[in-house]
Image (cartoon, rainbow, N blue to C red; front, side, top):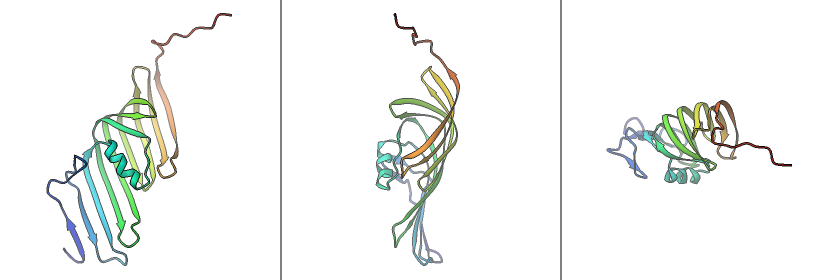
Length: 168
């Protein structure tokens, strides 16, 4: 406790079976409305447990991570009088695998930023099986469950699909 701020640096922090590595928190009693700030700094996975936690904060994401790690740098600030939460973060993965709307996708070299409910993916390489590869950009509001995805296809393969005209 120093100058009205309580700093907590847990030893071996874990949550939902994920090692939270360098995560820590502070409680600031100096502000007109006291706040708790949680700094989540770890390599994790966006599994069903984590999606359930986000859903409690009305953050709904349409995908589930199956493989790989996400370098997480997330700051959650909670106003202790109103319980209003502000979430800001950056996430990066070199390689991961996600299920998205029934498709199993491999993603590479992906940067994701979060500003409360607004998710911005400015750069992501996506591969779907041997069928398609695309550079993707995403803007998504997780509270409204609305946004857009911009696909720039770099490869499409129809080797395993038979196209023919019906008999007349």
